[in-house]
Amino acid sequence: MTKISTVGVIGAGQMGAGIAQVFAAAGYSTMLWDTFPQSLEKGMKGIHAQLDRMVEKGKLSASGAAEAPCEH
Image (cartoon, rainbow, N blue to C red):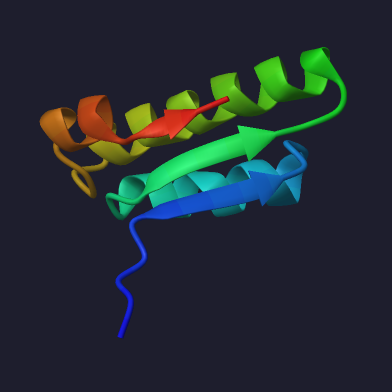
């Protein structure tokens, strides 16, 4: 059985960014794509803001948020 270690998400809107954030928080190397650079930038900012909120609520460690592998 093949182990999945990298996930790609196409579309950085609300749904795509949310999916990418869940995978990144779970430790998967996550790649996020969008045809519109401004959408990609907004999606990435949203992901990092959500990870910060998870740290504030104690649902994720600060080191876990810093290590969440999400790229564009």
